[in-house]
Image 1 (cartoon, helix red, strand yellow):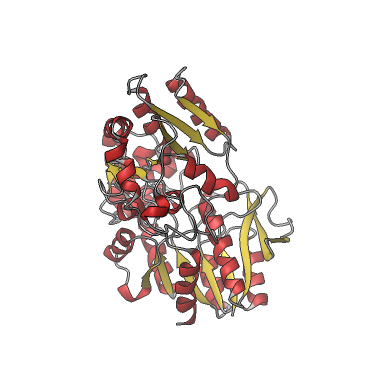
Image 2 (tube, rainbow, N blue to C red):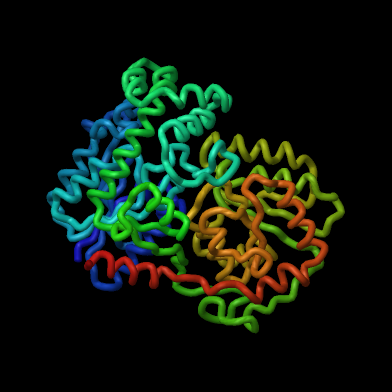
Length: 455
């Protein structure tokens, strides 16, 4: 089969979880004898006159098409075909793929592109990697008011208020404006600037509901990464026969770790591990984004006694001013604590060794994630996870058995767990390590997709 993987960003300028997932999946499909191509937009100040880019990444052809660096409101909201995206539409028609597999919905990769793939007579598969679950959550976290896990059901007034509060309004003001009828919001959204955006938010949520229906009408299968996400999409009216579950896994071909002698999680004997010191090493490995809960980990750490036998390492890429600002905020909060350190991003091939050096990995996420993948990777090298009871973490970690889960945003509860593992590692991390689940592999993920491609 000729298979196109469509993603919102790609190597070399972006190295997030979705890109790693797509790269790993593409390699497995290529090894299985399929022709695989990758397509992704790139931003340009002049997308109409910019030329597409064609190159290879790890032996797989990549097609990049230009979209505006500053899209119009209509383009950003999916109400107009994005300038430059027609290049992708024409390329799809020329390629005539058997399957087009979408992994992102961003400006320039949305409903219009789904329909273009269908017009090219391709089978259309969509995998939701984000907390928005397609077009259900405008806030993009599935956390109502940013405080508690949402019920997952999209409603214009409720969701408009939540998004407006996310943009800086008080709950009362957000609720009042969110209750503006969608029809009136459709008129008000034509007003310029933030005023029009705010007054038109209920109309945008109603538009999101329409786009979600169009997504499900166009796609042959909509793939979710967790059971919770699948049930949430169904609760919003998706036909069950359109939905499929394909959980995250590892892209690694093998694991090299002090704790794993061969293969993945090769038993309690191979995972037996003597700690070098009595000081517990906690790691955070990921992006410096607020939705990752990294500030909650910092708050938890500074609340602990300074003489607690515990060190914490924050490690990840810092590529933008926003990320640098968050790192600076964390460092200001941490102060001169010698037990806390910061380390640069780690290459994909070095991730297993870095994770294996931690006694426990902390994933304090504040959004619904399919993984995160780093938690699965930690389990693969014998490192337990402390996380939040949301998304994939809630389905990967069994609280008190192979790790711990706390309520998202509850840094005080997180501090209590950190204190517990530092003072009693034998009954926590050492015991958890013997109960870690076997890591799912990209080979299994690719096999499941090949079945969906051929239905």
